Image 1 (cartoon, helix red, strand yellow):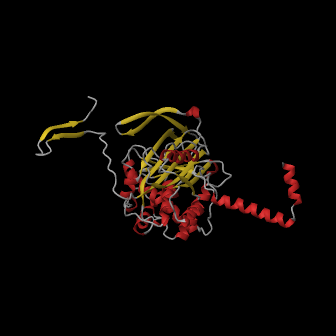
Image 2 (cartoon, helix red, strand yellow; image 1 turned 30 degrees about the vertical axis):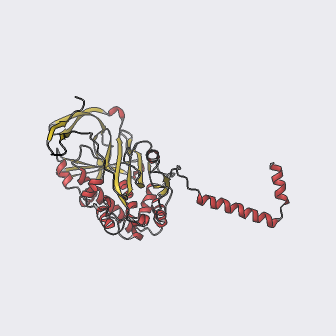
Length: 431
């Protein structure tokens, strides 16, 4: 059959052969544009369009991210003992959402996240930072990726989809949240796990997505770097770690000592500052250690101006370093926190995300952030991911849900007279 095809091709007249090739190419091209697989997940990050990015624009986006980082920290500092999050991941996921926000919704988002208002400044600057994070030929691992997950039969504005792809690298995957909610959730979570090397698992819990979900925006970021000067594992010993004036625990404490151990270091009467660089010295960990139990005072003074001042006072000198090994994970459901920070409208039925779909029917139903960090003798591994879930305002009467899964009171009454015949309370149905 193959030889017959070759023979037929040789027998074709040049004109017919050219026409046949043109038709074949057209079919291939058309097919490529029409084919939008619903199950294929976006690949890892590719370079995006940073044309028009300026140093000032990049600085303004970085300052916005850092300002949000400190304000968010202040907002959540009383919620638990350990805190760890990626302000870049949260800001990027919400920046993609902001690109579709309009009117009051956009104003509130800009105020909370401090995004540059000018699109021609903000968008190429975001792209520039994205490309810098994903640059190749580096000894450490640092990657970020964005993705959009859209309800397959819901119409989004082409200009919005193109914008996110062009400046954020967030390509669209069509899913079926209506008929295959759980499968869609698994697809998104699998993508997040892949991007973070299985450090962020089950980002979106069961029950978050539903038949009204129309769009999920995700960002993932992963980092793994070795210390420029590594700790020796044999020097790590169990030592006391004071978690409060009243309580001390035992922790594996790493140590680097000796005159040859030099770091950027500075101190004030209330604070010690240590900068520990990673391989290539492009990234570092900045540690702020308050004197005695002055954490609260340090938190009160945590602002961009002071951080810049502390950085500027660092000088390289010998330092004996003792630091605990630690690994922990955090997970934040950010709806209430962001509303308290000044973003109520985006989560309400008054939200305006008409820049996404041309309607005002979408609102943010959930913002979820999850992070992981491990610090040991070799270096640091960290990962984080953020999901913004956009939901469709339900049309028609809503269906009430009554779930008696906690203590309740009940009564038995005479319907005609209203006379209460029995009155009770259920606290533990198993007793």
